[in-house]
Image (tube, rainbow, N blue to C red; front, top):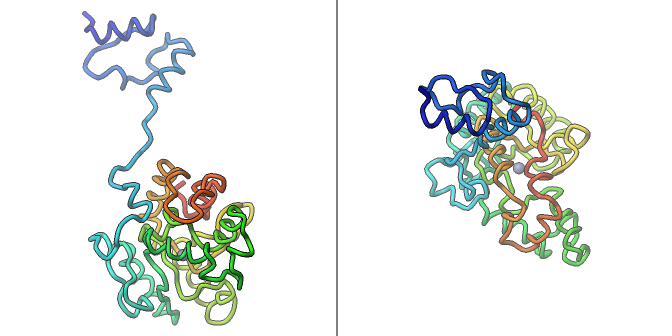
Length: 279
Ligand SMILES: [Zn+2]
């Protein structure tokens, strides 16, 4: 005797034989239903798809840096000699691995110092708007005068700086080491540091987020040899950003109206070294 649930399914599919009633019918593998025609099978496959893996422990406000890391217990302050000053914060797990990596580097004669770590929305807004208004020069220029077109101005700032709400520095998983110029890492001491990082950072979970622009990474910020991301935490955050962050969410600062035209999420938030993404 079939139960009512099976009868319902039978009506829905017309020809489907409902075998047993102990497990929910929607868990039965499609392959067991040999008589389902292809259009029905397609419809079933669509409805049976796993829902997007939204991780509710990761909030949109966290992804967008709307918090104070100094008051968030997931974060710890970077201590000397690992940071160049006080007030630098990282997620606890990231800091532990950073310390392990820096100690290993020091044993090899290489010094690694955090120059920038977590920057929340408020901090990133101050950086962005200083460049937007011309209070801070970019390549020696007051962009409010040399680039009055908002899209052109935003794209110029985006060579090196994120829009508030879209920065990986919000997450506490990403940090800048030693110097903010690629030139520094191309000879002498800087080159030795960079070569050590390329060879060893992956052992500690770190990846160079902004690898050289090219076929492998056609969009996004310029290369940054100093910016490293702790993958065991940041990969999940990147996935959640891809699922849930929309261009329209990137707002609340001067020039934010350009975010949709720039397609800020796809081209910048997700425009990272493919090796830093989950397979
Ligand atoms: Zn950075």
